[in-house]
Amino acid sequence: MNLEELKFTEDHEWVRREGKRAVVGVSDYAQDQLGDIVYVEMPELNAEVSTEDEISEVESTKTTAPVLSPVSGRVVEINDELTDNPEMINEDPYGKGWIAVIEMSDPSELENLMDYKEYGEFIEEESHEDELGD
Image (cartoon, rainbow, N blue to C red):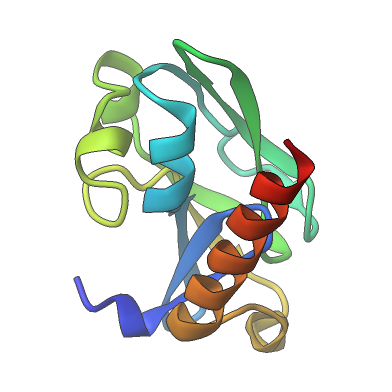
């Protein structure tokens, strides 16, 4: 997986563009913060979604976190393997741990997302702010 091909949201979702489709998952940073993932509420197939709509929920031993859609469109595929193996998000967040595929209604929305380098800087800044808040 070439992480340079991915786009990221401030809510720690990632997107890999495949033509008019966007493969969506949660970032390595997010899965690390969540801890052991024990359950994934799968998105509804064929659901129309807008940017920042909740499409899924990930439950870990620590907490439950929403997964927000980074793009608008229609959910055309879901990763059913996560139902029985939610830990795949921990083990391979950018590969086998993907959550959904969205057929984008407006691919230009990807331009609003961070690239890998920007996301790394964002995480660093966010981590620093968390340390100051303690």
